[in-house]
Length: 213
Image (cartoon, rainbow, N blue to C red; front, side, top):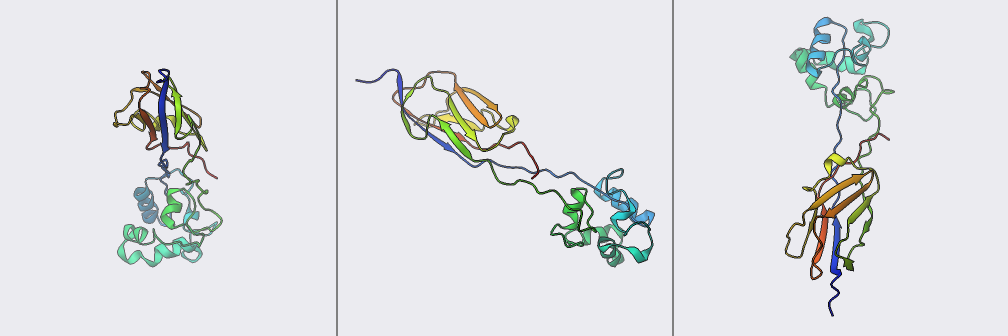
């Protein structure tokens, strides 16, 4: 006899979340007004941490004799013009701290100082810790809410009905509401599930709340 109060099965398949990392754009000042101005114009800065002569020079002066490693690299490429010199050294790691000059500039750290470098960023995607119902569960209630708990908090603006889908055996999408609270995603179907069908829940993309290590 068919159990009219039960759905046959639900299979949960959670894909790896897409993680995006954003960097702030930075800039600097230099020993001559031309280089100073071109740097700030190129990197859209001014009034930032890099808006100082110490970006290219060892403190406290601005003479050509006290350039730091980044300033020396820029000066060595000035034959192609100031903008060309800046572009030419972007992919170099002038201070040897394992970060390229452009990465340091974008992070507003000093490309000529090996004690100044970007904070480490957590690039490990969230993982699924648990699901309700469990994967491949059978005899699931027809009014079930589908829940997935992740290893870290998610940005609720990145999880919605376009990214969290519940589909039946014929790939028909079940209408419902998606809620995100910290690291838990809940899908609430608008209708009772069919007790003769198998359902699959899929989270295609999401973004965690960004933090630095």
